[in-house]
Structures are given as C-alpha cells and as structure tokens.
Image (cartoon, rainbow, N blue to C red):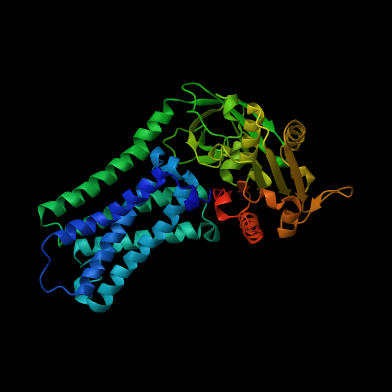
Length: 444
C-alpha cells in the first residue's frame, strides 16, 4: 500500500526515528573516541560510508522479521518496499567505500588474490560480492527466470554470508574495535543479528507450528480462482481488519520457506474460519488450488493496512481492481455488509473477458443489498455487452467518479502497470495523493 505523510501515525514516525538512530549510532561511537592521527578527510568519509552500509544492511534483517510493532505502523507491503530500496542504498554505500579506497588508498586494500590476501580483507570482498548478488538477483529475478522458491533459499544464504563476512571484516581490521566502547558496539551488532536470525528461523516458526489449521473447503470460482477455507485446530487468528492478509504454508511446516501471502477474503465478522481466494499465477498458487480438504496448513497473520477501518470518518469509498486484485475489495465489501454500513462505494473492476470476472454473482448480490455501484470493464466483451470496454483510463474514471468522490479513500489493487496508470490518471484528475492506497505485492 502506498502510504502518505498526512496519514502517517505517530508510531510510524517513532520507528523512523529509531531507524535513524540505529544508522547514526556507529558514527556517534566512532567519532566520540580519539581520532587516528594522520588520517585524511577522504579516508574518514570512506570509513563512514562503510559503517553506514553495515548499519543499513543490519536493518534489513529487522525489516524482514515481521515484527508486528513495525508492520502495524506501516503495513507489511510498505516495509518490504522499504527493504528493497534500502538494500540498494546499502550496496551503493559499500561500493562508494570500496571505490574511494581503490582510487586514493589502494595500498590499504592489500593483495587482491584471496589465496594470499589477509583474511579480513578477503572477508570484505566476500561481503561486497554477496550483497551485490543479493540486489541483482532480487531486482532481476524474473528477467533471469529464477524460480521464486530457489530465489528465497539463495536470498537467505547470501544475506547470512554477506552480513557475517562484513562483521568479520570489521573485527579483523581492528581500526575501530580497539577501545572498549567500540568493542561493545560491534558485539551488540553481532548479538542482535544472531538473535534476529534465531527469532525468524526458530522462535516465530515454532509459535506458528503450535497452532495448525485444516483446509475444509476448496471452492472453484470464475476466472480460475479457488477459494480455500481454513479452520483453526488450535488458537484462532488474532482479530483482523478487512483487507488484511496472512502468510500460508500448505502441507509443510512453518520452518520451511515455501510460503505465500494471500488476502483474507473472509470478513472478521465471519471468523474464526479464514478464506483465501487464489488464482494460479506461479508454482505455489498452481499447487494450492488443487489442495484437497483435510490438508494441514499454517497461517501467520494478520498483516497489512489495506482496510476501510483506517478511514472510519470517510463519506464513501472508491475501489478499483483488476483480476484477482478484487480479493481485498471483497473482504472490505463483505465487512460493510455484515456491519450494515450504508456508505456509498464505487467499484471499478477490470478483466480480460466476462468468464474471468471472479465473484460476479456475489458482486451482483452486494450491489442489490448495499449502497454499491459496480462498473465492469472488459478487454474482450461478449457481443451483447452493454458495459465499459478497454482499459481503465482517465476518461472512464471521470465518467464514473464525480468530483465529490475525489476526497474519498481510493483503493487500487491489480496488475502493476494497470495500478500505476490508474494512480497517474487519478492524480491528473485532482485526487490528492493522500487519498490513494494501492497494494504493491508481487509474489509469484
């Protein structure tokens, strides 16, 4: 979801300040001590880039650990988006650190041959290479045709190698570990990193494993979508908001990385059962739609902030979905129906053809029973089609969204190009950025 500053809660601001402090702490400790004699400003700048890069890399483990205080402040999708761009920034700092040494202080790099070089310098090169590979394989995974599950395994291994090698480099070089306060700093960094690894790979999965779920229904729907209904065998999921999501493991323990996030299409009022509506778009989803009732599963949630509950004072809502992006909209619409919420909703729903329109029967019922207007948009309509055709462009939006709706919350979910095009059109129409939320997940 795209989060804007006008809706940024206080706790989100607090986490930003804590992250800034974590990045600044190495510099505070290092500069607080006695400065080494004879060092040039450019040398100190290079060291600052290196320490800044290490602090940024360490925060990546916090961002991906699914700590609820962090995800609750922003939504998991924003946390992962921040993780992505923050990782690129960390690698840029590392490359800057190396480039300055290579150009102006080449002697400090020692022998480049790993067979004869000092181990602490080889560790630095291993860390740099692993971090660069992390970014390249993440940014170009689809171009390189790396299967998602293989990429996940490789991502974890590379991350552990990279950060471990970076810590070894700092300790081995010893320029900033001779004094007690600096030894405490790097010891704290190392211990914190290890504790996060233990939490994410052991403690948190164990808590999930203690509360299994069972698939009780597998309901086929239009467009190849299947709705999988799960009931808890242990504790039910914590109360969720409509539009939130959870991570799903199917017939595999939660210690495995074979998992996938799905929107909870069941409104909270219909718990404790949880429903995911899944379209086969990758290896995991292609197998999930064939899961038979009785299959054991594990759920980790709820996460996310794509919910009408975030705007209790809104006069109405605009929802624009493409394909299976209708799922979080259905969760929000069903919640409004359960609560007797009579606020107006305009739903614009784009699909390739009529057979691909998932939940069309439910939408027809909701349109009759709620203050809901559904606008179907088809790329390839049937011959007798009387509705909208083509793409969701500015002309179509202006036709169905009068100026009075511009300040309503706008929820966008669908293919990336469509979502971006719609967002641009809405901004051109005068819809403020603070009124636009969009799901940005792209897991296949």
